[in-house]
Image 1: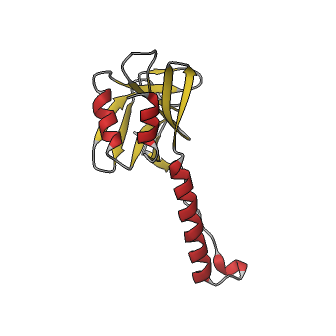
Image 2: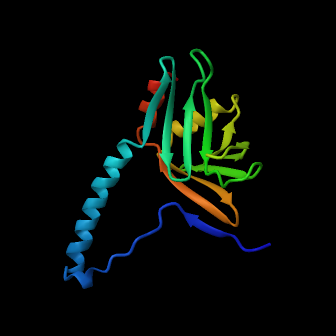
Image 3: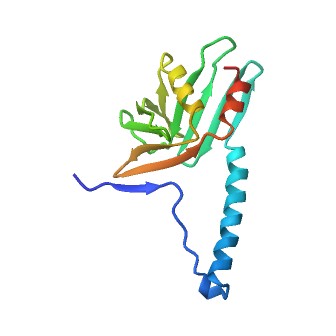
Length: 168
């Protein structure tokens, strides 16, 4: 079996301050301030709610390589949770979600189309998963694509508001 490569969805970047004539300390401080402001603004809008029909809304987090969906198929139906993954994922392969407090869920890719694959959470396990998401601040999802493992970090900023709008 060939060795597996691990890829993060957002690769680190490198800036050479000396080539631009900026003192390194000033440049690093400016970058830190800009990153803090950007991350705060981004975190506040991580979760959104879409309502395809008047009585069926879905809370979702959209990242390159994964979309987390929580919603109802119709009014009065129980909440469901699913992960939409890259179409390059393979049916039956494992998907792992781990949250910052150590809680984790092991799922499997259950079906695939030309546009995406899905890993669904059982209806009976959805309340447990939602409770875990509600008490955490961030997490990571990992799954295999060919000979690589894709790691996708996410935050739960805005999750409680999105979930309330869906009507937990």
